[in-house]
Length: 603
Image (cartoon, rainbow, N blue to C red; front, side):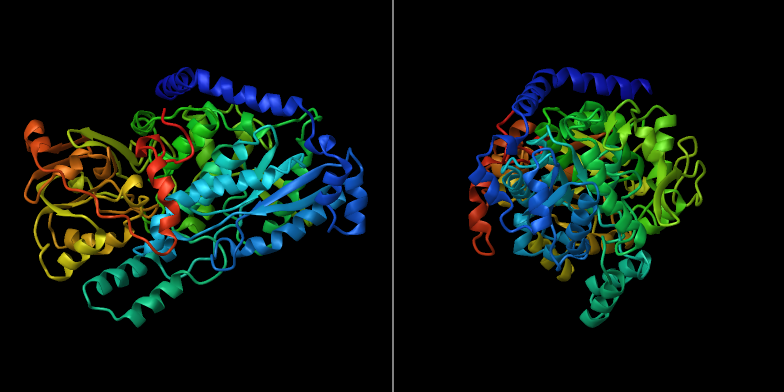
């Protein structure tokens, strides 16, 4: 192992010793109580399969026949989740082939940040993760299952499914992805039209034509945002069948992978020699693996929240310092839009996750000695699935990148460090995605222009007031203030100013996006303004320095003088669009560096 990877892993183990032991003890207590349905009365059990076909009823009467839960985020509005409509039928048929049953245990909500960007619904986005976790627990709480399959793809959905399923960590759990859509208009062209529209040089019809040519069919959006970072992480944590992340939907190979998932879940259920409970798959080492993958591929900044929350659900305590220390030794070996010009389909063609995993393992930057749903060892995930005469098989993935503009070996990376940096200073703690930021934008010092919401920044941009060097401070965007919406809609305007040659950066207690790009942005700043953090005391003209090279976030105002100012107060919580239902979550939310989660007591 690389010495830093080994040291970070060991300190996570030590830091988590009590919480991890408590989690494993709770999971073992549930397992020791025996299969849930064995404890159900006949009336209870009859309720559980009253609507099934006669054949399935006959199977479920047999106390030894396995029963697999399906928890799905299907809806037909989201391109990534629309393919999941077909999966339950495939899963049920595959389960019948091996003398088992599979039941649709429950659905979870799935909202799209791409639809709600800049809209009131975005204020529900982060907490939808916690709702999904609770909905997953409700689906599994009938306690009638030997294993579970999680069907979900995008931003908050996979973290929420993970957190909820970990509360049933005595069960084997396999995540069943849907795959990316085919490639549409180039990402460069899409970004060009967006920039023109932001400047009033393209019509709404031209913008819509461009966006429709990009987002044009079933499957995950093809840029490397949170959704595709999720799929990468499920491979790195060993919760997918190997190589299943980036296979297109509605293809024979995808259908074969879907059918293989329930069969494998049955093979690793309790009572077999291959028993592989989810609570053992997700541990300190597998989470370090997920983090290594995130850094090596320049993945989504949202996972500085989600990975921490997912770890807490398994009793594992991650910190931003772990991210930062591993980022300094994990080279950036992938460039996928917005960190490069090509999309995830090109990434897959160049070698994909099998190549990334081989590189990280060979360099000692990831742990091989982990449990996975495919069997012991992460090396199993340097293979790729194929159909051989209609039969699903796995072969070794390429040991050499097939496109050096997209994937490179660790000894010839795009950058010596990973794509994330922790920033510390008088304003608090923040994270910055550096993988797409040019070298001459890594340090920005300029006067602050303060906004209490993103609409105010847009208005100032369109009035022509921002044609200058400045640091945009957008505050009251943290979890307690308004649910921590993504501020990705700011990217086109700030990018235009950056392209004009101005020194521009963003400092915010909100999120940006899995598609965070070239604008240097200190995000997830904690303590947030609504909690009385220093952000609430900044005024226009205060000079701020964002230094990603040193990892510092400074304000050129004496700390005592700053905090002696009158504190700006958060605007009243907005109502409508369901936001009033989430007040308790905003009040209960922990800080960003603890996952911004409403489900766990403060550490």
